[in-house]
Image 1 (tube, helix red, strand yellow):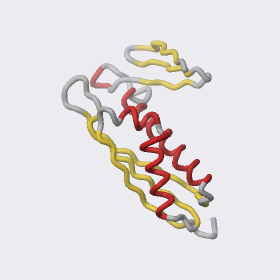
Image 2 (cartoon, one colour):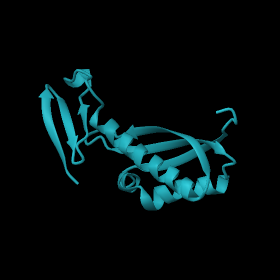
Image 3 (spheres, helix red, strand yellow):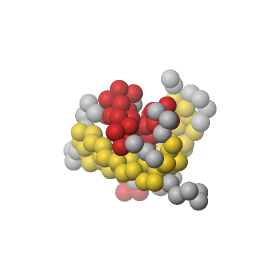
Image 4 (cartoon, one colour):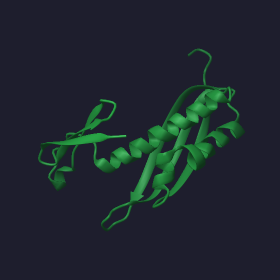
Length: 142
């Protein structure tokens, strides 16, 4: 896996993934940035979220659960001194579908957290990661 980072201006950078996708990162205005993109630490949380959400949806589909939507809300706290690593991260999965089974949803989240999501397992080396979930029923009119 590879990526390339190019300076745009000030402390703004363009990141180009090995698969050819790009995004802009920038620092906060109080740190010399112009708010042109997400902060690098925000991207770590986004990566964790994407990894976890992907796993959970894939596991639920393989378990024949009829998932129609998933929203994942993540909140994190960082150390106050450098390096300001994440010290705690909480993931709240809001899963919507038809006749979703609680035990299968719990299993999917646990499998992602403990076995499949490399981002979660890696960040878990420095942060306490917790999970919660809500199950919502899809309306038949959708």
